[in-house]
Image (cartoon, rainbow, N blue to C red; front, side, top):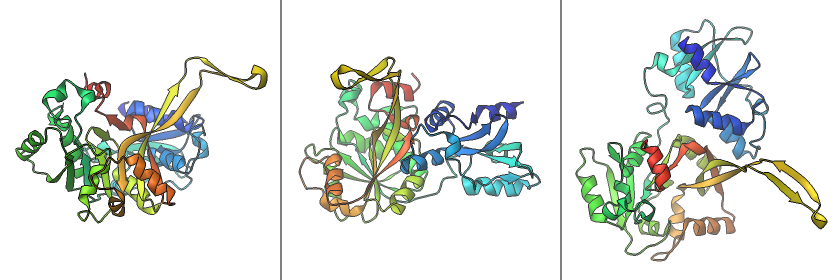
Amino acid sequence: MKKEIEIQFRSIDSTITLLQAMKVMDERGVKMLLVFNKNCFVSILTIGDIQRAIIHNISLSTRVSDVLEKNKIFAREGDSLDEIKQKIMMLRAECMPILDDCGNLVDVIFWDEIFQGNVTADNRKKIDIPIVIMAGGAGTRLKPLTNVLPKPLIPVGEKTIIEEIMDRFESIGCKKFYISVNYKVEMLKFYLSQLSHHYDIEYFQENKPLGTIGSVSLLKGKINTPFIVSNCDIVIEQDYSDVYDYHVKNGNEITLIAAVKSQSIPYGVVEAGESGLLSELKEKPENTFMINTGVYILNPELIDEIPEGEMFHITQLIEKVKLRGGRVGCFPISENAWRDMGEWNEYLKYIGK
């Protein structure tokens, strides 16, 4: 009975849209869904499938059935438990459908049934690239807490925000951290130095505000591989190895992580043409946007293009790259995969208040 409930929990109809499927994933906290046409099993849909569709400019209003891959790997009735384990591990899958010779679904094996562990934490492809954390701001949006503490030390459960961020990067193999500091820097350094877990951190300090990317000019000569830049209040629920693979394979100089956000207008929206004549009336339309999360992958050569000692924003660097014909990519994630803990509402939601 428990398994039947779990299967139902992950089931969607093939006629719903990609946006609807993404919302189901967010609401149910999963990244893989079982797709049915009425009562017949069709395939599986992963967050990766949706992300690839967005990258290829496929509309989120497209039906799930129109983007399903035909070469998905499934287990077959009669496969041994070891064979099923190997397929799950190879695909980093949350679950594995088991089909009979006619393609009918006969069972679903879930990760916890055979591994008794977290689905994603230890099973992700490892990458080891530098992480730059922008932690120099005063955190004015979180006052009055930041009157006492620098924003990176705001607590989230038994950790601080910056520990939460660094632990997530360490879990995927990233070891070296560069932290841009300014506001209450001594308190931040002292706290991190007293932890039982010692992070490999190199601090670099801006003596005046240098914008969202300006202080990275201080890292010239220190980084010679692609690196991730993250604000110190952003948590992303995403396998960064997928973002890194996209960045490299697409030949990007910059890849920004963008959250897909939809917004419903609770009114009928009118479009008027010539002489004010009604051309279209849309009842409660839903608009979809891509929101910049504040997390990027940059190629190391770009550090030389950041002016030293000047106010310089990431938007200026992006524009600079685009003007000379460089590639700037956008990697999409779902709305709930992004947490901006620099906002009171998001911070309180994240800590469960």
